[in-house]
Length: 117
Image (tube, rainbow, N blue to C red; front, side, top):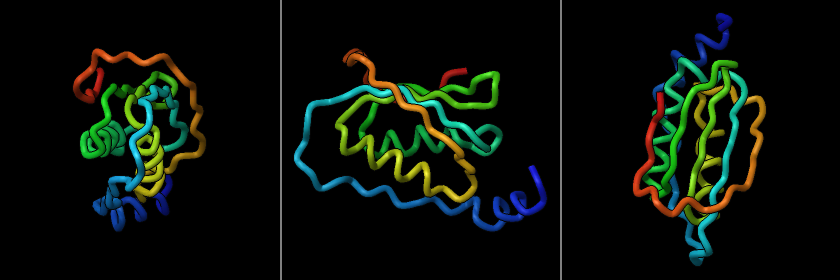
């Protein structure tokens, strides 16, 4: 991490974006797998993912990958998943450079969101 990024994290890192519950009609649930690239390990990314997912009532899991990326599988209303992505991209201590997305079949058997190790 360079000095400018460290200063940005020190000054802005404690601020958390506000999660807005979307005011939209509920749609069919969907499941997505996201792979986040950039500065997403060692900055509390997975725990922020869990916090936001919990606030939005989403289920699934997140884990670090050996290549420095973070995988998130998330399930719930598509509008809520859009809000999840908006919030994650707004956290100043993260430097997300790319997000790869993949649609998955619904799991239906999860009741919470978990951090995997």
